[in-house]
Length: 258
Image (cartoon, rainbow, N blue to C red; front, side, top):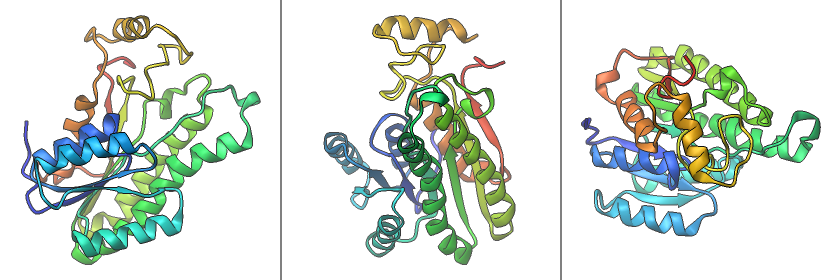
């Protein structure tokens, strides 16, 4: 299903790969002007730039570090100057480091927290002020089912995803009165680069077909999830069709965690 986002300006962090790219394309196909953030993968950025050119001349990719306050401030200032004030923000940028807590280094912990949680805070803070002035806006935070169920070897990741949900509810309460809706999506195991090496128990596996079969067996739907499954929910949440949806967490896992 397509939603009418004509006139909207959307920022999608981590928007050039996996779930982020699918969201970028879905929003662009729905009529929004999209700025897709990336950090370091130039090849994925070029591919996404070519994809966006098919939809809108003003859509673009932009490199900045979501965990760096100066980078974020400068990036949003550039977006406002070059494209306009964002009316949609999707906080999708995320990383994971796999190890048990007793073996997790402080540097690994900090890097996950900085990107996943601090990045959500910094980008939201930059977007919220102008949204409040305009008395409209929609923010979607991409969390994870790990926020609730935990995931062995992914303590930092799970903690940050739980933190994103808490931020979602705070933002929904604080900024709902200004016409800004904030919601979260909690994907389960979705077939992306970041998860292809993890089987159903959160441990690494070399055979992707084995991983895919393990995932499919856990789902009542009998298949793995795809980035497009998440993107369609994100498009709904930022559209007028979701005008009375605020502070919610929508799980997209095919019923795996029932």
